[in-house]
Amino acid sequence: MSEASVGGGIIGGGEHAHIAAASRALVSVAARCIDALVPATVFRRPAAGAIAFHALTFRGNMTAEVAEKTVVDGGHPLSPLFTAAHDVTSRLREFDEARRRR
Image 1: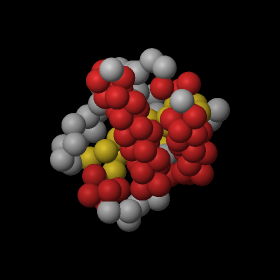
Image 2: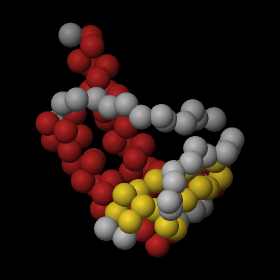
Image 3: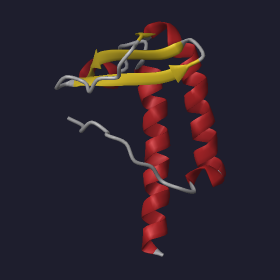
Image 4: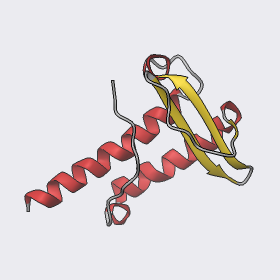
């Protein structure tokens, strides 16, 4: 089971083409998945065993909470969004680890 993210960031990742490309792909996937999200006035942490998706869009704040297993197994309309977000965070983590080894 994964742990919930509570923020943070890595400065400089977007300057690298492979990270920037993954980020653009994430935004594109999010646009295609927008109908699986609902309007939100607050963004809550997900329940145990769930994944929360939060998006700031031109439609306003949007959210969804889905069982982690369903999303990870690819059986949910938001599974592509999970995969795209995971790709960005993986590339950022690899970039940060390589930078720290220098």
